[in-house]
Image 1 (cartoon, rainbow, N blue to C red):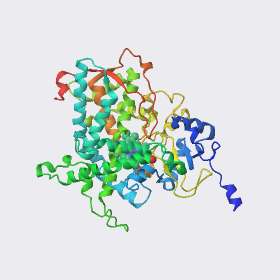
Image 2 (cartoon, rainbow, N blue to C red):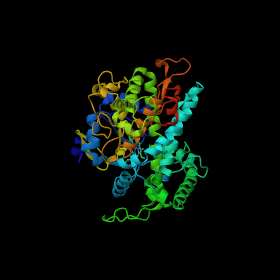
Image 3 (spheres, rainbow, N blue to C red):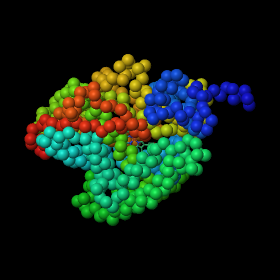
Image 4 (cartoon, protein in one colour):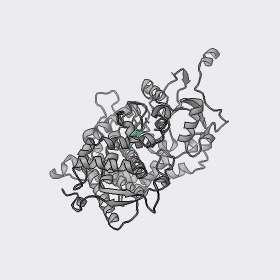
Length: 491
Ligand code: HEM
C-alpha cells in the first residue's frame, strides 16, 4: 500500500548513482570516508554499495541498537563470492549464516578450543615461541642492529598460530601454507562481483580464477593435515592435554552428532573440520600481529608511557633477573590500559565483519529491509570526541584509569571484538596473546627509533583491508635490559 511505503523511511544517506551506487565515494580508506559521511548524515546512514543496500552504524548508541536490542535481526553475515566458492559455502563460523549449524559450531569452538582454560593450556606454547623471539632480539641487541619488528612479529604470529592450530611448525614443506594465507586474504579482498554481480561475470580482478587455482592445493594441504593427525599415535606420556592441538580436538568430534538432543542430527564431517581450521588460522593469523605492531608503535612515540609500563612490569615480576610469566599479566593494570587504548585507536577489524539483516526491521524509526548489509564503524566510534572527549585522537592510556571498560563488547564505546551473538569467540585468546608479547618485549628491552628519527617522524599510516596494519614496517633498535642469566629465562 503506497501509504505504508511512505511510512517506511530509510536512514538518511548520500545520493546513489546508477549501477555503482555510492561505491565511488569510499576511496582507499573506507573507515575514514564513512566516518566523515556519518558526520553529515548521522550515526545510522544508508548507502548503496553497488547493488548492495548498506547501513553504516557510527555511534555507541546506534551500535547498541544493532548488536544488542535487535541483535537477532542482524545476526546474519553477507555472502561473498570467494567465501562461497571456498569455505564449502560458509560452513565455518565467521561467514556462516545465522542458524543451528553456526550456533553449534560456535559453541563447539568456544568450549573446546577457546575457553579460558584452553587459553591457559596453550600458555607454554606461546611462551616457548616468544622465548625464541627474545633470543634473536638479544642477538640483535648485542650487535646494535636495527630490527624489522613487523616481520619478526609476523613470524612469531605464524609460529604461534600454526603450532596452536596445527601443532606443527610452519616450515614443514608438506603444508602449502602460503596458499592458505593467500586464500584468507582473497576472501577479504574487495571483489567487484560482490557489489555489482552483473560485472562479476567478467571477473576483471581475476579473483574467481585465483580462488579456483588455490582450491585444490588447499584441500590437499588440509587433507594432509588431517591424515597426519589421524596417524599420530599419542603414547600415554604424550597424551597430556598440552600435546593436543586444535586439530586433534576437532578430530575427536569427527563423525559425532553435533548435538544428539537437537532435531538437526548433523554429524560433523571432514569438510566441517576443514572449514573450521581455515577459520581459526584466518582469525588468529593477522589479528594479534597488527595489534602488537600498533602497541609498539605508540610506545615508541610515547617514551614516557613505555617507561611507566616497564616500571609496572618490573615491579610485578620482581626485578630484572627474569622474564615475564604469563600468570603475572593479570597484575598489570597499566598494561591492560595500554593495550585497550591501542585497540580503541586501531581496532584490528575497523568495520568488524559485515552483518546482514534477517528480516525487515524498524530501528530508531528507520526502516531497514531484509538482506541489508550492516557495517559497524568501530574505528569511528573509538575516535569520536563526543564519546572520548576532545583528546580522542591522542594516545592516552590513563583515560581507562577510572573507566574499566570490558573487552567483550558490553560497553558499546569500545567494540574491537564486536559484540553480541556474532562477537569474537577468540577475544580472550587474542587479548592474552597481545598483552603477553608486549609485556615481554617491553620488559626485556629498551626500544629506540632508528636512524636518529624523532618520535614525531614515525609514520603512523594504516592500510585498509579486513584489518588495518601499518603501511610501513616498524623498524626499531632493541637494547637488552635484563641481567645475563635472564636472557635464557633461567631464574
Ligand atoms: C586481537 C585479536 C582479535 C581481534 C581484534 C578479533 C576481532 C574480531 C571481530 C571484530 C570479529 C567480528 C565481530 C562482529 O562481526 O560483530 C571477530 C569474529 C570472529 N573471531 Fe576474532 N578477533 C581476534 C582474535 C581471534 C582469535 C584468536 C580467534 C580464534 C582462534 C578468533 C575467532 C573469531 C571467529 C570464529 C569470529 C566469527 C564469529 C561469528 O561470526 O560468530 N578471533 N573477531
